Length: 82
Image 1 (cartoon, rainbow, N blue to C red):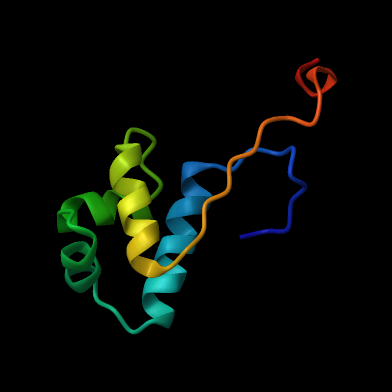
Image 2 (image 1 turned 180 degrees about the horizontal axis):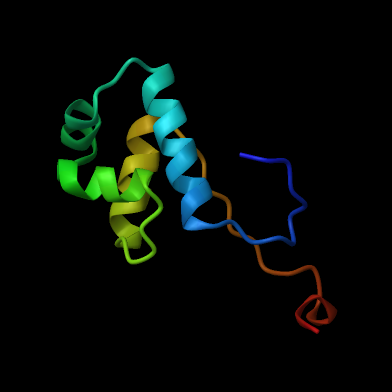
């Protein structure tokens, strides 16, 4: 994942790439990670490909199974929305 400031958004494609890179780094096959996260292999394939309609609760389950962190923070001020 590229370096970015806290005010920029992240894409599903970037999350998918991080999932794939981390899975491979841990030496896991897709079926192994899917089982550990409680999701189907098809879901994991779609997530790694950056499908925009994946279920967020399942994305979080995969990230948690990999030990990844996902941070969400409100904007520093209302001016950030302008």
